[in-house]
Image (cartoon, rainbow, N blue to C red):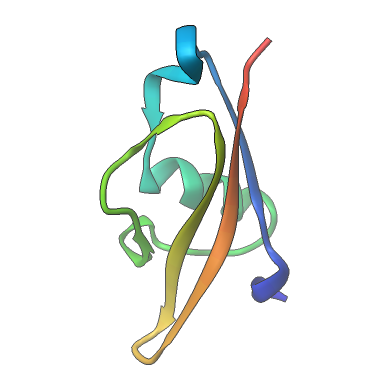
Length: 78
């Protein structure tokens, strides 16, 4: 069930847990797709790309009136 979905994304990060790149709606949609959820990246709402390690909440619009929040865990890539 989509409401129990969560995403973990590994990124390279420097000092103060600041990412060298960023996590975008496309990255989140691709990660969800690997879990069997077909979500258009335009349905993933980010005010701005994620640029810090840690736990974030991201809104995903499933239908016009259905929006869920999924946890996105950004972890340091080895």
